[in-house]
Image (cartoon, rainbow over all chains, first blue to last red; front, side, top):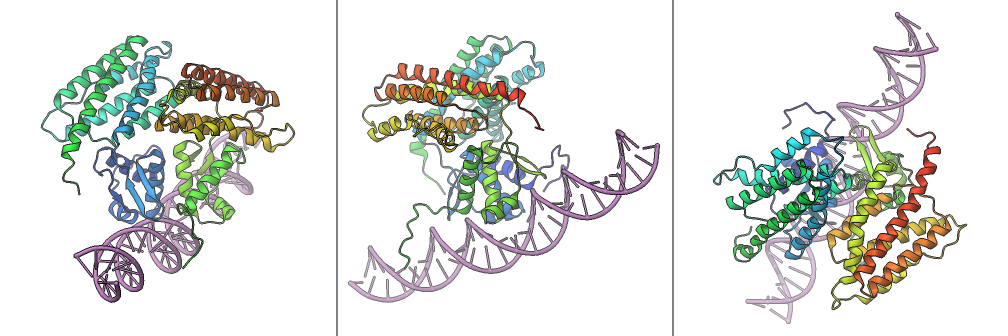
Length: 233
Length: 233
DNA sequence: CTCGACGACATCCTATAGGATATATCCTAT
DNA sequence: ATAGGATATATCCTATAGGATGTCGTCGAG
């Protein structure tokens, strides 16, 4: 499996399994509710059970998988509407503050590269409505943008909390159209500009508007989910 | 058939090891920076290495232990002053909101027992300045009180975030005197009363005052730390 | 006296085997 | 036909052994 042997820090098999499983859950390669067999995963990833076990233990604390003591692991189920509301409530508490602080940080240690990164991350990468790939790329780009704002806030704990929230967001199945992506990009750019121009209040408000918009776009999936819950394996 | 098999949920050895290690770290039974040998812990707790490994993996995600890929685990070092400030900054962001919501929650589903718990938890348990035990009991009681406020907020994510913060607070060595404990108890009681009487603004302000006080009391430890930093690598 | 290299030790990481338990299937009785 | 129970299978949980790696101490050269 492993070709690229240029590891800056010796990567253990448990780390590999962790990132692999996490990205698969994030990208919905593993359906919420799916059962995770330990030795099944071990054979599938061609490693032993112990690193799988370690990876699952980490994911359990993060809330991405659930465990029943002598029954096995399974991917955490889709967010209920209450949990969804709770999630966006929490985002509304954290992310506007992060945006404001990112815009109001000390100008002395302004990291210009990060600003460029921010502006680049705000853009949705080469979207084409037909490619099924692009939806995954979009959600990934969205995650990276919000994580970047979190890091720019200067508060490590705030950044970590936002990262954790983003991980949970992917437990909500959303159907994103091209119009939604355009709106998202516009809102992201507004936030990025406000941060780069160091306007804390503008950034905060832009983030708040973005979260409202995102909430509305995601909430639409709930209405449709009631009717489209049909074919489930 | 077996008679007394009343385990509410079968507790696995990994869970046991996890709670055991976590509580030891919290109670400073394991010094920050201390090396954690896997098979050393296995022999000490009289179990195999695998559950130890799982417990450490969870604690790593929580930030209570650190890992270097082929070198071993160690208890996360003491908070630097910057990290300490970051922690209280985050608490100031989360906990006043939690207090306000706990006070403003829906009166219909008011859980009276939780209110009584809250009032009881606000009290510091039978403090005697001489007993070395009581300091541990005090920090435990403080943790339980803040966690209770988090749960009463009605937001599961908010409660989880506060729990995680409290866990990190115990990575800061604080020397608490009897006067500090009295102040803490008074502030806790003020918060509890405001929540019980459903005065959100009062509760929020009381929590803010409490955090300011707590910050000042803990920050005193840093002044001494500069002189007593001694043999630390 | 300081710096660099070599070697032994301890520890982690991985793999495999055996015991214990939950779940599913099938059979029997009402 | 349905409900209850016993058996069989699959899976998890634990324990132990072997390979690989980092660390520490010692020795020798400059």
